[in-house]
Length: 71
Image 1 (cartoon, rainbow, N blue to C red):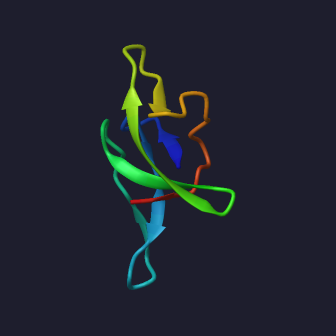
Image 2: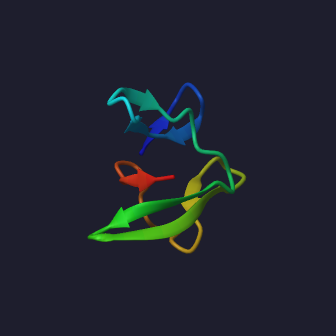
């Protein structure tokens, strides 16, 4: 996961069923997904506070950049 300055959203790339690298297009507030923590997939959702700071619900101190995610 990475912050996309152009869309002002966190985003990620994935490999589709044909093996092509795709852009997810940006994660929206309230969107549910999983991220990998050690060997576990943890369900969460992303939210944003009024000063454009994005966070994971239940894990507000976790840095979002470079998280491995699955939708």
